[in-house]
Length: 218
Image 1 (cartoon, rainbow, N blue to C red):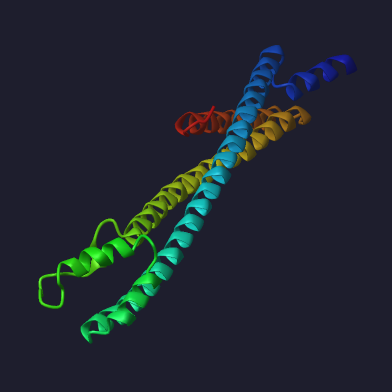
Image 2: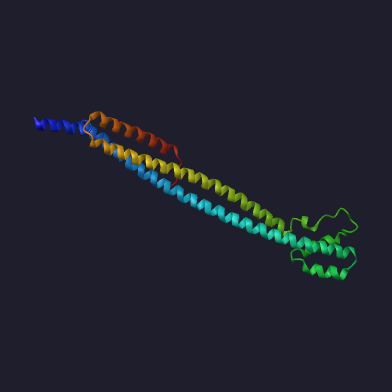
């Protein structure tokens, strides 16, 4: 009589015999695989996020350096140019020659071309610094490109961060599935066991569906 009662308890605890055991085993096996994949993807996306943020930081450093350099060049060139214009305007050619030597090597050809156009009598002559060959313009363009690339990498990094977070949440959800499926084996009441197995199965299906919908890295 005691043996029969003991067998009944075991059947209840193990979710209605061998078929129930198979269901639980399948849930546990599938959850372990899903957990491993989810954790792997979380790590990959986390690494991608780090790389993208580092690239964005490097691009911003380049942009800041270029902007600072362009600012120094423009400030110095225009200050010297203002004095140069006053000198040639007043006819002080000696001072103009001295000031000309203070221009940076790449600016001197622009000043020579500008002077050749007789700007004092030709009002249509613009600034020599409007020439496309003026290095500060190229430096500013490089800075703008670097900032654009930095924004692009930042967007990639934020997307990777979101994906890493989603995979981490999925990993936590699968851990709950493992806990519930394992816990179902600890109860003698068949209704409780079935409820726990059913809940773990539903969570597993939702989790796997979420994994399928998420982008992957390999």
